[in-house]
Length: 326
Ligand code: HPA
Ligand code: ZN
Image (cartoon, rainbow, N blue to C red; front, side, top):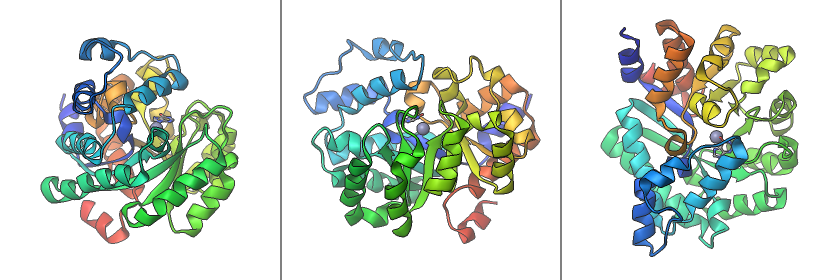
């Protein structure tokens, strides 16, 4: 069977990956040591064994715990560089990296420490790995819109290092419309816009992300398949959906990969893409997501090609650069 080899060597773009979710236990322990901090687990193995989740919130609590070791610009650089090298090994040619600033400012760090560390790794990836990388700042939706405005304000001096704005964290009870004003502001400032919607939340959250926030892509969006009118809208407007199969498995959005609806999305003509979300926590980078999902669903080489094309098409690289990839 030559499909796994094709999936691995196929050039691809990653559009949904939270950099804090790429922090592997080994690096977490190393950064804790460097910063004179401790990790509340005796070793790497016992930490990895704690990565069992029943839902998004259980994951977010552990993910937040892991971010406590990040203190300096070099920490953010090292975490990002480790991800970029790993992504390049999976033949990822372009990546749009999500990050939170509110998590870190909540721990007493300044926004520029975060953004400058991430950005320096992205510059080095272009030069040393031939991998283009851009940054998308995600507001935390469990916090208030006023706090999102503060995060945006603090990032504006570093505006040139960012391509877009997103919305992440606890979805249920925090619908997109809670952030209508701050997304309108970000849009006026020229940011590209995305939002997590329809991961655990209902199709109504996808509608409001599109119609109220005016996002260009939906992160996850797997719940859209419950609403035929929404499926028609997503197909007509060619709205990209950044699907994360192993994330959905680990957070029990689907009981098994064989029950995932990625194949149904492609058959419905939706512009789905495959992404890793939080690879250190969900047990797999891009090629693991591709090979495991293709095996479980019996997807084809034609669908692999479609997903690769979708990933570049849905990216925020400019039109002239897109021609080089295709
Ligand atoms: N969903 C929402 N917020 C997140 C996720 C996710 O999958 N990963 C990191 N923050
Ligand atoms: Zn995500």
